[in-house]
Image: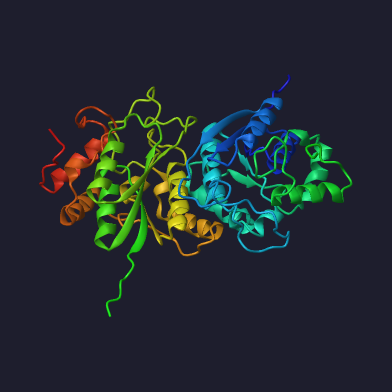
Length: 222
Length: 222
């Protein structure tokens, strides 16, 4: 008798950037049947949303685009009057102007709601070490406490947060992505939404440096 | 010299029901300058949203109506194919079909994001004892853990959840509301969105019983 094993279900927060896309590929490689949530939170540009959708389609992952308004947030990722930064050091500890108050808290809340509704056991998020120097909602202790709190507030008590890139550097993430076959040319990291990545904002700079350190050409660079 | 004291700021989750409205009046009586968040989450009807807006306007409280889609949630409050319940006992411990997975988790996440952005120190929520028998996200231990987690994920470390009705019965809430001058005729509790409250759904039944126990006429009843 052949026993059909039901695949494990997971929810992945998908932004279209290389971190969340690598996380999706990693979860998929571990056998998860994934549902993705893509957020449209009035970002400066819609480019990353389009990239996220294409990645989901390419991988046969069902996705939800959730439009949320954070009209009160004063972040350069939302407010076009605040300039995107281009001179941050990797070891900088202060909160960057790209910080959107409570962003991951809201994103994870949606993810847990979806996870409980479809009976998924894991919520995947691409948060990592170089983020949590500046973004408090990328810290391991936040993720742990949030998981504990939310389990208490849901009927399902076993949904866990999986942040497989948490302690990896950008360089390690690219190495992992290359091994998993991540189509980096389809990912978008730039804070600006021009035709091609600007190469100058902090997000581009960190990405370029990581590719350079690996002596690999970033397929999105000029 | 006259010193101008800045009022304390607070964020209140406002549904238009008697619990959240009483919470708003209580917070106001304690001197808070409030901002309200009203959620449009594809409820069966928009009646409570209209009530919430009117209450905010009446009190000079600025408000945000946040449209959120929880298309995956199978709750009778969203899915019109699921009948609203009308026979629940007050002591029932099971999760009701009106449960929306992660609803308060999402609502509170938005509230904390707004609170941090406007420098408010308290997030007010009208959760109470008769809810938390069935809704896990109304439990005191959830609220406590969520506050701890979210403080860790924000830059501000001192925003607290205030749930002043938590241990009150519906009857006590009405008593408090009457003392505070809550215009109960402007609140909406019915799960159905007819011209007047149906008087039969669980939400109506619990409200009617509480008013009757106090020998007070509910101004919204026929």
